[in-house]
Image 1: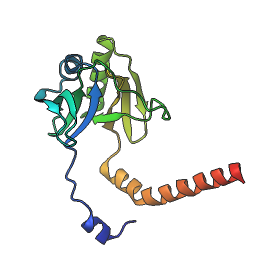
Image 2 (image 1 turned 120 degrees about the horizontal axis):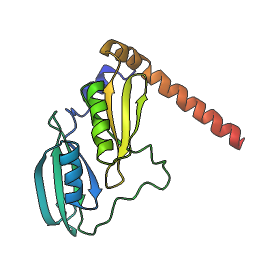
Image 3 (image 1 turned 90 degrees about the horizontal axis):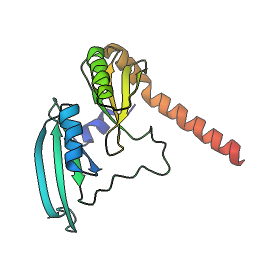
Image 4 (image 1 turned 180 degrees about the vertical axis):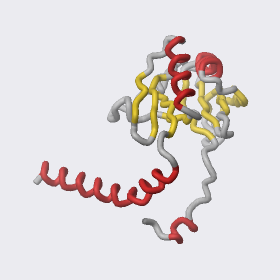
Length: 181
């Protein structure tokens, strides 16, 4: 377990502000996130130059707000190109998981998505959460999830988390050595 000093010296991250992806078309993306998922479009930035690098790349940056005050955001670069999946990673790995308030809300979301023609996988029971999975119009995998365990059970899992990472790391090393050795 990390020392108390390690936590005290850590960057004081207070939560997620936004997570940004590329999108093919900002209006198509707006319809999906605002009209289907119910996340209001709350801010749009239009620019010709990237503020952090100065490079010329006309874009629109759109922000959808979640009920906790954080955002999911997208960049439309004006070229109608979808983001490419990572070539060395299975499509189920990289995803954004968004929390809903209950199993009832999860099932209602599944029904709404399917009625709109969105292919949905699940409800999947992960023993601490239940989830559904689907792709947005940009090919980004999304998960809607709701917790099924109370905080006490989760705190017990947290006590074992560092040891489980050490165990996995050792098992992975041993497998690698047995393949090469």
